[in-house]
Image (cartoon, rainbow, N blue to C red; front, side, top):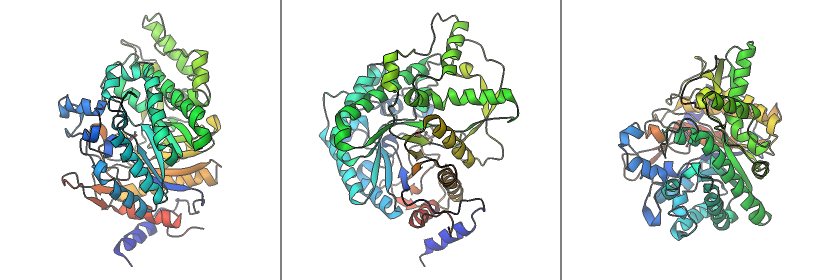
Amino acid sequence: MQPYLVVVLCIISSSKADINNKYFPESFQFGAAGAAYQIEGGWNEDGKGESIWDHFLHYNNPTSKVIDGTNGDVACDSYHNWQEDVDNLKKLGVKLYRLSISWTRILPDGTPYQVNQEGIDYYVNLFKALKQNGIEPVVTLYHWDLPQHLSDFGGFLNPQLADYFAAYARICFENFGPYVKYWMTINEPTSTCGMGYSMGLYAPGYTLIDGGMYQCAYVTLLAHAKAWHVYNDEFRAQQGGKVALGLVCSAQMPLDPNNPKDQEAAERSHLMGCASFGNPVFVGNWPQVMIDRIAAKSKEANYPFTRLPVFTQEEIDLIKGTSDFLPLNYYSSSLVEYIDELVGFPPNAWFDISVVTSANKSWPQAASPWLTSYPEGLRIILNRLNKDYNPSEFIITENGWSDTGELDDQGRITYIQAHMSAILDSILEDGVNVTGYTVWSLMDSFEWTAGYTEKFGLIKVDFDDPQRTRTWKSSAKYYQNVIATRCLLNQCE
Ligand code: BGC
């Protein structure tokens, strides 16, 4: 018996009793995920242009933006090591690999004026290698690395960005469409709009707390919808793929389940968070509570207009119905407490929502301060989204656990096992059509403001080694076994 199998069996036999002991359906696809800026490196190689993350971390005092003062200039160096990444994916046995395309590798200044053939070749070679190994790429067009040139035009504050994004999407569909069946347009807009345009923690670092987030949300939805229509009108008949917006959602649960005020606050927190992007795409327009509250709060602050951009009917129709599946990122959930209305100046998203969220103290804590483990929350939010949006299929496109990099990462095994168990409960007991799971992440990578201090990988990357050597952790071996047996325990029925 190989030594790692001994480790796997020990891990499995010590698993908790409430883990689902049924087999995953044959059609369910296991996978792993990553994103361009976090893994590729090669930030200015072979014609790649500058992105907002390159700019943000080259032109500011590094430690003022990232805890350890690092950046993604080299990261995992997947620009050079991609064949090894494919080998690892093959060894794991995955059928899906979620990755993102670096916009400035394809279009150095973001505009369709100049296409960089070397950038195209990089992804074509990667896609071909994946397909040859029976792995389906799940491709995100935008995982936060906007071309700096387009940011100088206002980025996601400028509605014209939607046209630039649609033009970029067309070039990707033309060149990569033959290899790709699942497209995600934009990853987690709640994060990038909130952190990038309101809190200033992510590139481009704007602190427009009164309205930056809403303008960014508006432009994001237009950009997503225009890209979806390009695919629908020009490529779908020939390529037959699916295109969707990537949501991050969690269960928002009342702190006191019997208190109607906490119940109302929890519902509001869901509607003004997850549903702020889900509703326009699946139902049409922002949720009504969001429209009403931001209008009222704007008025209180002497704005003669609402700070939430108002969609025209034409825009509502353009955006509605533009998700062919539901890519869901899920990490943790929140307890929501009702509080009196927050007022003050300048008005902002926190005042607009006016709730307090926290984690239950019994939920295990990861290395990332925002990440606690509550697997049941995944089942709750899947049920909710299934009821509200009834998508044809869900793929859990991110879910994972951070630690400080230990090779025997039992915390990660416990987390992913429990969350995959919740997915199995959703499929088998609630009848929710979850068809795939891409664990975050295949390997340790650049973790935005946390730099290389928080590790999410199944595979360790030695960031001190110029070769960026990869080493399998216990979780990779556990996941490999789950994929091989389609079972979370050492025996299923
Ligand atoms: C992002 C990833 C990130 C992960 C863990 C997600 O919000 O899409 O890029 O690494 O969370 O923080």
